[in-house]
Structure formats: structure tokens, C-alpha cells
Length: 317
Image 1 (cartoon, helix red, strand yellow):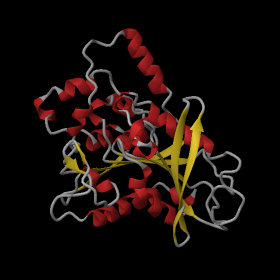
Image 2: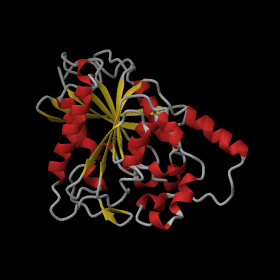
Image 3: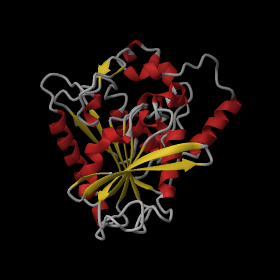
């Protein structure tokens, strides 16, 4: 457990017997009495309907989203970050499996599993309403958030896009799983069935930060996304071209709000400040372009996040 004033963060491990996999989570919250007989002791003032979940980017973890989790918790939200098995390093390096990216349905299913666990006896000292969730995510997590509201991938679309010269600067194409033979009708039917199962009616609003997979998502499916949605993306993107990802989502989701972050912001300004030298497809996660102030840009992003929350009346739940 870590704490800052009455802001606390606690890691909680679950086990999904259906998938036979662990599910690690990080909770951010306003703490009450430290001894309440439960795993997490929420403040008595906790609004039982202010529940937010966060999905991290590919091969990341909830820890990289501390800046967002603590900010939301400071405003009275119970926030839960989900670590996606097979991607997140928090399970250990030996569990990382790049092929999990092709099993895109696992991420939304893990989120839905965690939402369900929040009513488990012994976890929280208050009965939280898990039927009214604000879903947030970055990069692949941004897609995860949107998939929970109905966004669906289109068979073959990613391959067609990534074969174009105009896609050469799109780093997401490096993760593309090449389909060398046409999809059979049976395969398409199975994919459609799996994607339908990703939708979770408990998701009532979405905030998607520089979402990935815009180039692979079916346009019609986005038109069916009806929950209030905020899409924030980096205009001068060094990883995911703004037009093909963030802007594409916002243009096809009914009444979605789109915010473009400029000032040289790249794809990784949406994760915590850090000091290591790890790269994703040649782009440093911790080092921004010269003159870019990540912390200041995150404050700018938070301004847009809380403005959206207020406009949608989510603080009055």
C-alpha cells in the first residue's frame, strides 16, 4: 500500500477461474479508517456511484497510470487499474506473450471480470454500485475502453491499411498480425460472436487517451457507440498518426468530443514521468521531444478530463 495524505493506492490480486489466469489490479482511493476488516477501507464520504476503471497500453501496467488514478481519486472517484495478463510486466517477464495482442477480446473480458469482483464480500467496506462505470484507457487501453461500448475490429482492414505507403510512419503496424489467407465465413462468424461478447452495459462513459487500432476498427460499429465519449490524442504524434486513430474514432462516434493535444506531445505523454531507457518501436517511453513538459501536458489533459466529467454530470451521480 502507498499513500499520499488520505489518498491511497493498494494492489489487489484476483484469480479468474474461467480463464485460469491471475488478474492483478491497482486501486486508487480516498481512505478511511485503516482497520475496517476489509482489504480496502474507503472513506465514509466515498460516493458509491463514482467508479472508474483504467486500461493501460500494450505491455504496460496500471503503475504507469498513477498520474491519472490519483487525480481521479482526489476528486472522490474509486479508481481501479487492470493489469492485462500476457502483456503487463507486473506478472513477470516470463508471462509476456506478444501473440496475446491478436486475442484482442481478452482485454475487455478482463475489465468486465474486475467490475464483477468489486461486489465481492471482504474487498471493500462500502457497497459500491458497479453498474455505472467511467472507463478510461491509453493506447491499446483506449481501444479496450471503446470496445466495451461496441467498437469492433474489421477483418482484413489493418492489413490493407498497413500495406499502404501512407502508413509507413504508423508504429502500430509493427504489431500487425499478418493474415496471409482470406478469412473463412466460419472464422468471420466466430470473430463477430467474440466481439459481441466484449460489450459491457455497465460502461456508461468513456475517456480514451491516444487510442490505438483506429486503422483496424469498423466504421459502422463506432456509429453504434452511444455512451458519452471523450477522445484525446496527440496531434504531432510520434507513434499513432492522429488522423487515423484518435480523430478517426471521434469522427465516427455519435456526439464524441475530440481534443487534440499539441505543443509537441507524443504518444507516451499519457504515462507517468519516468527515467528508464525502454523503447517501443524505437520511441523512448520516458524521453519526450525537446521542450516538451510532460507533467504540464498531463495537467492540461486532466483539465479536459474533468471538464468532460462535469459536462456529462458524472460528478452528480
